[in-house]
Length: 271
Image (cartoon, rainbow, N blue to C red):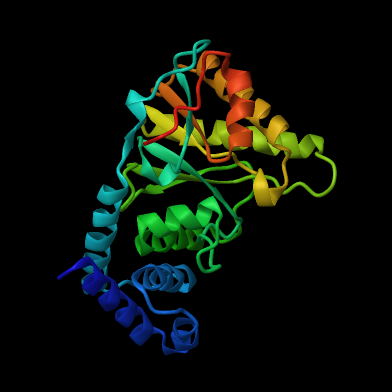
C-alpha cells in the first residue's frame, strides 16, 4: 500500500466513524498536500475514545514513515552551551527531537488541541504522536477528575514521536501585566517537568517556550525564568538528567536564549 493509499484509507476510516465530519472533508480541495491536512484535521477533532486496532496499525505505519522522511535530530549530539555543558539551544521542530522526553505546553484539559491544523505546539505534538496520545491523556484526566492546574506535569509515552516520552505541563495565561503568581507558576512548570523526568530516570529533556505565544507571557522574561529555574534545579538536585534542550522555533526566541546562554551558543538549527 502506497503512502497515498494509506492516507486515503485513514481518512475513510475516520469519516466512517464520524459521518458528521463529511462537511469538513468537503471543504478541502483535492491534491496530496490538502488531503494530508484533511487527515490531520480529522485526527485533531476526534474526541478521545477507544481506538480500532486496524486503524492504529495503519496510522502508526503512516506516521512512522513521515517521521523518517522528516528526519530525526539526536539531542545528545547537539552542541552544548559554553557556560554550562548540560544546557543546549536548538532551533527547529520539537517533534523531530530524539530525546528521552519533550515538553508539551498543554491546556488545562490536557487533551491536545481540537482546532484543525492549528499552529500551536500542542497540536503539532499530538498530530505527530498519533491518536494514542489523546487517549492516554484522557485516561490520566479521568483518573484525576479535575482540570490540570498550572505549574504541574504529567508523563505519557511518545508513541510515534522520536522522543520516548512527552511531559505535559500547563503554563500560566498572562492577562495584562505579569503577576508574581504567573512567574511562580511558570517556574513550577520547569521544576515539575524536571522532577518527573528525574523520577523516571530520564537523561535528556527538551523544553518548548512554555506560556509564550497564545498564553502571552513576555518572551524575554519567560526565557530568563526558564534558564534560571533549570540551572537551579540541576545545581541543587542529585538527578539523572544530564542534558536540557531549550527548543525554540522563532528567531526572536533564538536570539533571547543565545544571549542568556552565552555568546558562543548558537541556535544549532536542524538540517
